Length: 388
Image (cartoon, rainbow, N blue to C red; front, side):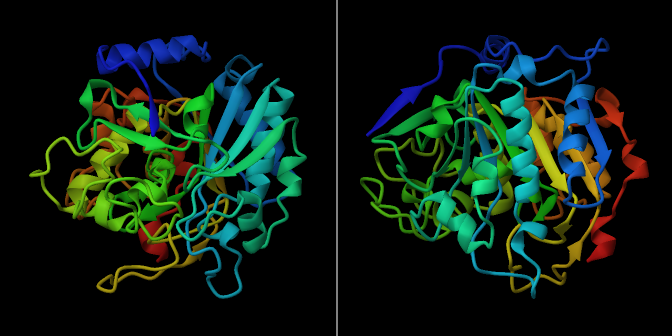
């Protein structure tokens, strides 16, 4: 069973405007352009908190956004949990680093957040998220003690909830009209995508927008999901249902709008990302680019790939209240043209998720329509394709 939320009778743009206004988000720049803050941060040391605090101040502060609110933070912690690049911890390559998570938690708590919940799904298990942190080699207590009323939840299934919640896509969506998700993604007042500066072998980029693929529960959208109802346990990737469209989700969840639409992952995945970002609006995007990796957001590449995954240190953090604008500036820092079309890097084999998100009314992806604060992107640029 799932409980529906959303206002499908409203237009997409109107719904987003009402949602943003209800959260009393910080006002945009006088120019009307969304602000994105860029900062150098060479290592995961004490400077992370101070740097992030300065970035929030440049954006206009987060007090008005989070004070007295329930804040949900979706991190990026892709499976397999035990895979490493040699002896390098996954936190330094493909996962959001604990120091950045703890810094965000502290600053939200200091700004008066009522409750903070750290969220991520696992395609391997239904363990408490704290246990998966331990498997990854990190004591979660540092994050849990960084602020008041801090919790964690593995959202690969029901988790601590007793029913799934439905997030409907305003305007009806491009691929799916809605998604059934763990209760935590519906119960929050403020939703933060705390992702990594990463590429994606199918969608080109894996930044704050693509991080939302991980809010879809494995019990419903994983390869081993049931046909009539969600499976009891999460297992497997999201290939058959989301990426390839070889089958529909369980009958209890919203079905595809058009089962005859292209099955090409390069067509489907960017549109699903846009649908997810419309259904679960991001109020603050933070991207960890202090250390990361090239080529993929996971530990492996497709067998036909000619690239290699390499550990790199761009030494940068990026943040903004508009996720499309934030991802566009991050793409520029990574050495890509945010306005690239299909066939151009990083979208050689897919449609542009940035363009689709803008068409959905979620924000601009043209740098000329974005106000950058802090470091100019060209001064911190780190060309991912040249690095590996």
